[in-house]
Image (tube, rainbow, N blue to C red):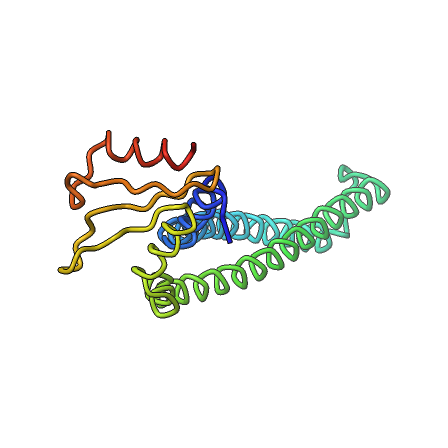
Length: 196
């Protein structure tokens, strides 16, 4: 079975992000920092809204306490309109506080889930798991063969030649000058033969 060289290269490149969890870890750390900043901002807004609510509640109670007004005080209709305005503000602030508490709860749950994911990612080592599943040498040899390259060894097990299967189906024997450190020209020659 023959595998296209470009497909093999693409498959190897596609595997690269799977092997390194550092990017995922950095994303989780950045998300935690954003969540912490967001939570601090919401807490500050919550405290400001709560202080505002207390002030408005005191103002409302003071307005109710002064229901026996002297003559220069506004009419009952004007006073009722002011009370309605304060009540409306109070309810809108209570709703805003309730909404913020809901958001805080959701963000806390999201933060807990992200922390659990970060802990799980720190404990998980995909390279070790992958190494358990596959022998690296056998995998490389399989990829080389699929690309059309088959090393030939001498009696000591040292690679001395390379059988190269070209795209036309011909098999070429290529002597390697220095198999341990192949030159750019040797590598280029092997690929040119494979593409022929």
